[in-house]
Length: 113
Length: 111
Image (tube, rainbow over all chains, first blue to last red; front, side):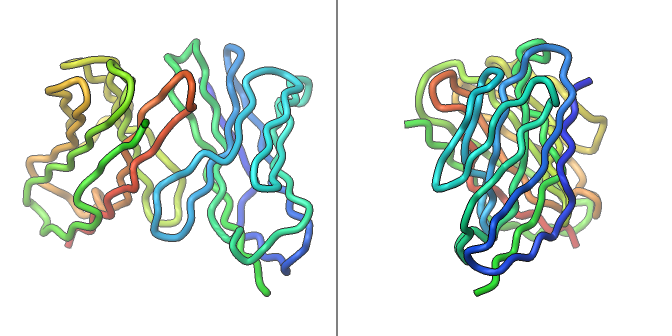
């Protein structure tokens, strides 16, 4: 079945540091890939997405590129802020599996001033 | 608008009591709807999904059930709660144009 693996946290960074969160996936079909963010005490918000190979999703300074050859969708941000402290989830949606979202385990990021 | 309304936001219930969490959605009709659970310090687990009124698929065997009495209403229930039912419950819908939208969640503590 489909699965998503992302690096375990917590990841602790200083403000303005570079952030990367690794995400790899396995899927039977051709999935769409997503990054969601969960701020403390809140639900999930879509951060960015990519629907086909080599697509780059971007939002709020975050970027991720759909790499079919390495089955990866790593999240990056060049200069993090304290407000980026949150839990980040990588996810895939596979039409072959009825478009259900499969999530990674989440990575907690803590940015210190 | 693809807004999802979930209530209550927090809930504390004793073991053995019943549960009913409600989710209503706005936007395009006949959405696919989902219930996810996030246990403390863990990832998200898909519990149920629905592709239409009265159509429910269960992903994992458990103490919970789901119903969809109306197109835009999705209910998560239990007859007798267990301690292991504690967690953060999220309702979601999918949409071709907007990706997936999540509600703000219900934090359930079973005591």
